[in-house]
Structure formats: C-alpha cells, structure tokens
Length: 458
Ligand code: F0G
Image (spheres, protein in one colour):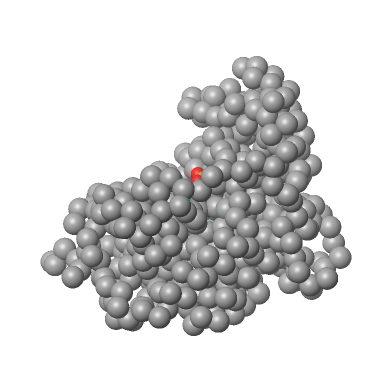
C-alpha cells in the first residue's frame, strides 16, 4: 500500500469554532495584527508551535490517573527515571517544568562572563539563557544551512571545520561545555547525522570539554538517521537514539515536543558532581528532585510519551503529513525551506512576496493573510522576531530571512485540515502581488514579536 494513514483513531474531539472573514478581520484589528494576541478560540487551525500542543494517547491519559503526587519519593518519578535512563543511557534524571528551566539550571551552573558556548544553531531561549549569564552563544552551522533552496539530507549539521577553527582559536578554559541541537529548529527543523554527532563529540572530548545535546526533537532526528544515513536502515529506533545519546555527556530536553506531553522538561546528566549542583539549583526554583517542576501525573504521562514516541508508524505518518503539505505548497509555487523537516514547513515569505521589502515585514503580512483568509495561525520567524531597529529612522532592520513557520502539532490535525491550509495558500497565490507590508506601532525593548502592535501600510 502506498497511502500512509494516521496510525491512530480519535476518541476525544475538541470542537473547532468556525468563523467568517469579517469576524477574523475584527479579531485581527483587536489584536493589533499580532497573532499572539488572538484568543485560541478565534483560530481554526493553529500552527503556531509544535510545543506542548500535541494530543496524548489513551495510555498517557490512563497514566495520568495513576500519577503519584507524593512530595518526596514519587513512584511516578522512579518510573520516569527508569524510562529516561533506558532511552538515553545517562545516570541522573532531573525533571523540570520545561526545556528552558533545564537550560537555566545547566547554564547558571557552568557559564559566566567570558565563556563561549558553541552549537550548530542555538534556539532562541538557549541563546538568551546563555547570554543572561554573561557568556557568548556561538552558532557554527554548515554553509548553506540558511539557504532555503539548498537540498541536503543533514542540513542541521554543525560545520566541523568551523568547530576546529573555533577550538583552536579559543582557550579551552573559556569553553565550559559544547552543545548540539537535534533537530536544528532554527535552520528549519533540519536533522543532524550520526556521523556529525560522533565527530562533534570527538572534537569536544579531545579538548576535555563536556558535550550536551539539546534533544527536544530527538525522535524525529533518530528517524531521519534511519531514513537517510547509510548503515541505519535496519536498526531499531531505540538503538539509534541510544547511540546518539551515547556520544554526549548529557542532554536538555523540552518534553513538550517528542515527550508527547503538554508541559515538561528534563535535564539528564552523567557527571555526579554536576548533577548534585544542578539539583541544588532545582530545589531553589523548580522543586524537590523527585518532582522538579512537575506534578506526579505530568511525570507519569511523560514517561509513557517517551515510551511511545520512537514508533516507526507514528514517525512515518508525521513525516508523510509534513511532506504532503510541503509538496502541495511547492506545486503552488510557494517557496519553502528544502528539504522539508518533520515538525514544520517554513515558507520563504521574502522570496514569495518580493513587493514587500524586509523592513515592511513580509512574513507578518503572510501570517495576517493566512489568518484572515482561513483562520490559520502561523508564526513569523523573520524581521519582526529577529530583526533590529534602525536608530536613525526607527524602522526595522532585516533579519537574515523572512520565514513563516507552519508548525505541525503532534497527532492533532488530519489530512483534510492540511487540504484546507493548501486551499488557503492557493487563494493567496492568485493575489499575492496585492499583499501589503506592515509597520510596527509599539514594541517592547526585547522579544518584540510577542507583544508588538502593528498596522497594515495602506
Ligand atoms: N530547544 C529547542 C530546540 C526548542 O525548539 C525549544 C522550544 C526549546 C529548547 C525550549 O523549550 O519551550 O520547553 O522551554 N521551542 C518552541 C518552539 C518554543 O516553538 O519551537 P521550552
């Protein structure tokens, strides 16, 4: 059979609130053309993020009922600890409320002014948590990682020559640890090959530098290795994941992605002394080590999520949905980041709407149009999110790219929802030269995308 079906049936449903274009225009105006300010009820298809937006399985809902809410020594913790140890091979399992809490604890333990932390590409919370300690976050992606049209099987890799140069030029005491993000969210959800993980590890370890994985989407990365890297086709996914983790000394996990839960995170470490320091900080701000920032039931659902995510049928369906959407958009002439990843399709709005200069926010223009025409909420990853402000004119200065991310929640939408998205794009394609730019009316001094007020340029 050629058709890849959703490998589940649906037992609980959540009603979608249908809306008219007039209603959506009123909502957009009220939200000052910032989709973060919409009420979720006003959105028909929410592709803002794949983080914490997935659907849990029957087994996860059942696990929830069995959560042990004891302050100390919760059985749900020990079950989670056993599951994570088996998955990663690491010794110390520290639960936190989400990925950035793990980042804060690890970075505040190891980073300081004058330190430099290399990564293939830092996700924005990772960068912000490093910079908050006074350290510097260094991106070393492969050349062409930011070229949307360049096809490569492992475009998320770290550039090994750049890493060699960085390690040669930087005194080792300035590099308290190195990172690698699997999959590389910032460059389009692109995977990192096993060979690259191994080679990055070899280089860090040759200098005695500890190495941690930012492993929010570890299952999707493992699946790409199985599909694309020679020698892995017949290897079970749990073995591939274990091998990925084996090259590092620990990992940070935002469990809101491949943990298949709505909230949760993990800091997992081998080093006893480092784990002890991390647990002290954990107690200070997250909670006692057998619950971290989570309820017992959250840990129970997470343990179950981690046991079910490395399922070939599930990952095959997830890749098939992304490719279905990606292929259809390509057919419509919509430029997307190639090859398409699993957790999102990224549209190159700057290339598709050439009449809108970057300072007039082409990505935001497309986001507003997608919402207005079809109730679709996507997220701008471009000049609004990452650009600066020209001190002379007060206008936005361009980011590297103006992308729109259509992020795919796990096990939530079916193929007909994607058909809707495709039809909305097809309508926009016919009139795309009429789309106008936006200007910022009000913005916060940092992370402006979340709260900025905008207006269309007439
Ligand atoms: N690392 C990566 C690679 C991420 O994509 C994220 C979150 C985090 C760390 C932080 O985890 O949100 O649990 O604190 N990414 C989300 C996104 C927010 O929409 O891509 P968190």
